[in-house]
Image (cartoon, rainbow over all chains, first blue to last red; front, top):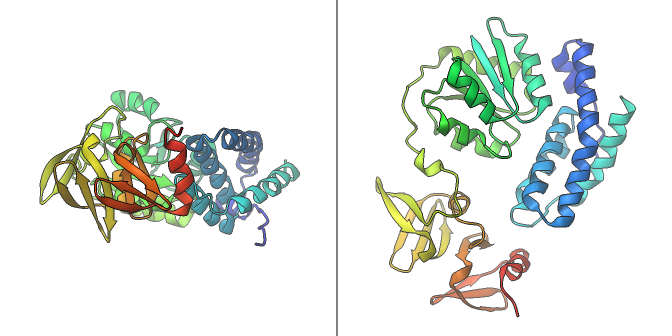
Amino acid sequence: MKLEKPNLLYLKNISKGDASFENKIIDILNEEFQEEVNNYYYYFKLKDYNKVKIYVHRIKHKMSILGLEKSYKLTNIFENSIRNLDFENQEYFENMLPIMLQFLKSIK
Amino acid sequence: MKAIIIDDEITARMIIKQVASNIPNLDIIADFSNAIQAIKYLNKNSVDVIFLDIHMPDFTGFDFIESLKNPPKIVLTTSDGNFALEAFEYKFVVDYLVKPVELNRFQKAIDKINTFVLVNEVPERVEQKAEPKDNSKTLYVNIDRRLVKIDIPSIYFIKAKGDYIKIKTETSNHVVHCPLKKIQEKLPNKNFLKVHRSYVINIDKIIDIEDNSVLIKQDVIPVSRVNKNELKRRLNLL
């Protein structure tokens, strides 16, 4: 499945040119994202799926901010499948993480 | 119009504040990363509107709503569209915004707030929404407008059929208009497991397991391939 590219269209749309707002959001995304990814893998290894869901949910929210509409929908399915231990779209989700990370670093 | 935001994610709070800054007469007077802080604030201050995230780790938006004695108008914000129907069971929930919040959609929510007539009643389904407690041994289900008490350890299994579920217990069977997922959330995780898309079983009631099925009482319950490993994991295998 083709992976999406993140963008800042949504942020630009709501900021209405407020660069200070955009920069603050980008700083926070950068601060939080790596830690959330680490926590996701950490709790997955421990099979603590309640915690895994929390971090998938947070990363999903960041996908929505970064204009990743398809990834957001697929991650929503992944998030809901964790409860049943189905892990649908897990591979896609995990493949998106380095792409998001790289993008966030590039706009820092 | 005075409003507060409750959301565990700082980016979500910032975004709502940003879009709210475009709305005349809407004043975001405080924002909170968890519901407990907000409850303390609301004990001393009144607000007209709460923008409330449903999906928070320890104390969900629904828990928060149930804790309020005189709720103001509430706009729910969430990344998960699956809660929409449940959200509108509460009379003071005015609107339901799916993240990421867009300005146009936010404006519509404000329009709804301005025309919404708040009925100050406790929601009818408050008791059904109580957080499942592992130590709770009873469950009340709504059958023909009566709340019928069910002893949770006595449940053999629950079977989904269309919009209904059948609860089979040691003493009786009940048919209830409710999704399987909803009742599963009310049952203790350590005893109850969804083994098939139509079945949640009480693990303590299993008599034996064979291939892709379990025997409970005299009923053979199918076990999906995807759920089989989890079932095995839960058993005290020799």
